[in-house]
Each structure stands twice: as C-alpha cells, then as structure tokens.
Length: 339
Ligand SMILES: NC(=O)c1ccc[n+]([C@@H]2O[C@H](COP(=O)([O-])OP(=O)(O)OC[C@H]3O[C@@H](n4cnc5c(N)ncnc54)[C@H](O)[C@@H]3O)[C@@H](O)[C@H]2O)c1
Image (tube, rainbow, N blue to C red):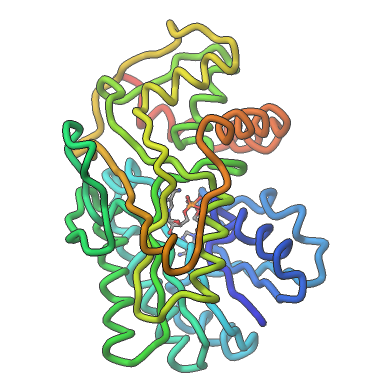
C-alpha cells in the first residue's frame, strides 16, 4: 500500500506521517508538501531515515508536476491535508486560500481519475458548518448540518468539500471527507492559539486574547484525529462525510489560563485585543456517526492532553524557537501590534 500524504510537513499531516509509519510499518508513505511558511521539514526529521518514507517538494495546484508524480509513484490512497489553514491570514489575503484549497484539491482529484486510486480522502474542518450560539450548549454539528461559512478560509474548505462530493457523484471517484474540530498537540505552528500562548508565556510576554476570550472551541488531540482518519480511509464508506470531535469544549480564556497555571505564570500576562472580524462563537462536534459506524473513540481528554502538550513544547524548544526567530516575527507584528 502506498499512501500520499499532502501537507505532511505541517502540523496534522506531520503527526499523521508518524502515526502511519508506526501503525502500518509495511506501508510506503510519500509526503508531498510545498513548504509554505507553515511547512517545516524539521517536523519530519524523525521520519527521514525510515526507508518506507519519502519527501517530495511540490505544489498540489501544479497540474504538470502532480500528473508526473502520480504517474511515477502509483499511489493507492491520497490523504489531502495540504491547505492554507490560518483564518487570520485568510482575512488578510484570501486568494491563495482559493488557489490551494479549492484548485489544488481539484488538480489532485483529476490526477486520481487519470491514474487511478482506491481512495481520495479530504481532510476538512468543522468550520464549514459556521458557528453555534454560546447560549445553546445543546446544539452540535452533525454531518447533516448545513454548510454556512464565516471566513475566506472556511469558505475555501467548504468549496473543496462540495467539489469532492461532486467528483464522487459525477465521476464515481472513491472519496471520503472528515470534518474535525480544533486540534492540539506536538508540532503545532507557533502562531496558533495553544503554542502561541505557551511560547509567549515562557518569554514573560503578553498573551493576546481576542475579544473577551469567550469563544468556545472543541479541542481534539492530533493523535485522535490521526486514528480517526486511519479508520475512515480503511473502513469508511465512499461518498460519506465523517465528523471527528471529542466533546472537549473550552473557552479560549479557559485554555489560556490552563497554560498559565501549568507554567506557573501570572494571569496579568493576559492582554485582551480587538476581536477577529466575523469571529465564530462556538464549534461543537457530534461524533456519533464515526463512533457507531467505525468504532472510533478518542484516547485523550483535554485535561491530560494539554499537560502533555505543554511538556512537549518545553522539551522541544529548539523546534519552535527556530520558527519564531524567522519571518514569523514580522507576521506577528502585522497581526497584533497596535490592536
Ligand atoms: N489545525 C486544525 O485544528 C484543523 C482542524 C480541522 C481541520 N484541519 C485541516 O487539516 C489540514 C491540515 O491542517 P494543519 O493545521 O496541519 O495545517 P498547517 O498549516 O500546519 O499545514 C499545512 C501544510 O500544507 C502545506 N501546503 C500549503 N499549501 C500547499 C500547496 N499548494 N501544495 C502543497 N502543500 C501545501 C504547507 O507547507 C504545510 O506543510 C488542513 O486541510 C486544515 O484545513 C485543521
């Protein structure tokens, strides 16, 4: 079995590469990644020596390159993580989100049709469902919840999802889609909430929290996301969407305070900044379908998972310090200074 993991130099794709090498040592894993600002080859250092792993640099939207690669490699399964994934960046510069997230997905699926595969799996997000009100804790996203996006990022992911389902219906391409809630864990790029707060707290710098920090996210450990995708690509029904979430809802301010307490830092480091435009209030996944149909169960709960994650960032400082010392600083200034 040969699996192409696109976007494998990013956060979740990188964890998925390690998960698959560990769980399926007989599989060949090829990571295809354009190494944008979010792609980091250091994340894959531990896989590079494995003879069952190969890294290929390239853009999923580059049709000639993708066709050549598919012809040469003869993949069985494609798991498409490659995406522009940061909501704030999508508000500043939407175009590349449409190019990578929609057009790139289309190029990959055209290659799948041309060269044949047994499964194309699209890694999507619960953000395609929009948000839920804060005063209705009884409501959850199911696979039947209408698509209702808020940001250019979620709109581009929703566009890709619709295209994936259209390729199933129109061409019979064997596709599956998973829509996951917010992930946390090792190798998370340091501009995302949890690693950003850990790195700034360690440096005794202010922790910027949007609005009042009341927005609710449903946190899932990246390992549990990987195990769910592994199940979907092997046992999921083609043409189906599977929601993935672990019922770990937390407000942003709860998450930030948990990090401060774990690092023994004062809450006075918190600095409330002007809210994100169109900020989604609450995400909450109903994972009943994947649990009952495929027998998936998360192994982490947030309280232990977050402590292990904080420890990982303490033990792997050079990984995130190398990122922070680069272009990231300019980006940080543009997004947060003067707010
Ligand atoms: N992070 C989350 O909490 C979360 C939750 C649900 C779904 N998702 C989805 O999971 C996927 C992975 O998310 P992530 O957080 O790991 O993202 P990430 O930004 O950390 O990684 C994305 C990777 O894709 C690569 N990439 C970007 N454009 C590319 C292109 N044109 N061609 C090839 N590679 C390209 C980047 O170099 C990077 O390595 C995304 O599709 C995202 O929408 C993420």
